[in-house]
Amino acid sequence: MQLLLVLLGAFVVFILSTLTGGGASLLLMPLVAWIVGVKAVAPVMAISIGMSSTSKVLFFWRYIDWKLFAWLFPSTIVGSILGARMFAILSADYLQLLIGLVLISTVFQWNKTEKRTGWKVKAWHFAPMGLVVSFLSGLIGGVGPLMNSAYLNYGMSKESLLGTRSANAILLHITKIISYAYFGYITGEVIKYGLLIGFSSMIAVYFGKIILAKISELIFRKIVVASMVLSGILMIWKNREFIFNLLSMS
Image 1 (cartoon, helix red, strand yellow):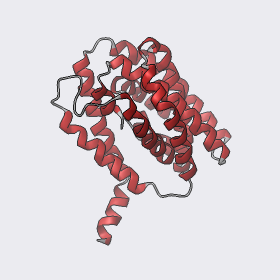
Image 2: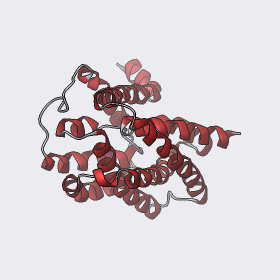
Image 3: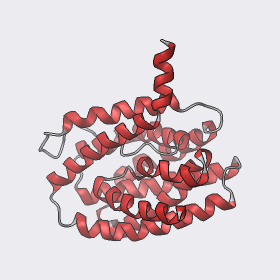
């Protein structure tokens, strides 16, 4: 019963992830932790999101911005390896709190109607941003749609955002999987649940693509911003005990 609930939850979450440009990891983390434990969440999510990203790349291949991918390529590998290395030895509570606040702050982009919703982002900007985001992803398991504002400000269409982001996500999660395996976090149970959730996610992406074709660019951007704010709230909520402890110490 637990597994069935997780698979159904994954199906719904990955449909939403296709419509919002990411964030499935944050929505799924509580469910995954429920059946495999907190420590296995990051490796399981690396496998399942890697599979869902593969299906998105197949569906949105012709929209991928390969110039942008080239800027992300080296920083994604380096950042994810470093993040996975620090996974076992650092407390990620402060980082998750900070990321949650950053995601919530994107609510101020809600009324933007133009394709570029803030500062002008150039392709080379994605190299340092990719390094930081991939490091955080390797460290805490997932950072949600943290870079989506940059993608939108770069001027990407909804299909291009999903295709390019997913191509980079495959690279990110393959590197994370190899790193987690090297450090001893990939077990038989992790592989089993990662693959099951991954197959559910690949089916969900197909239905998400159908829905995506029926919504406008403006609605898509509003959904992306809303998902970023929701991801931030969920991240803060997940770390509420840590926040209460901080407040009680002050």
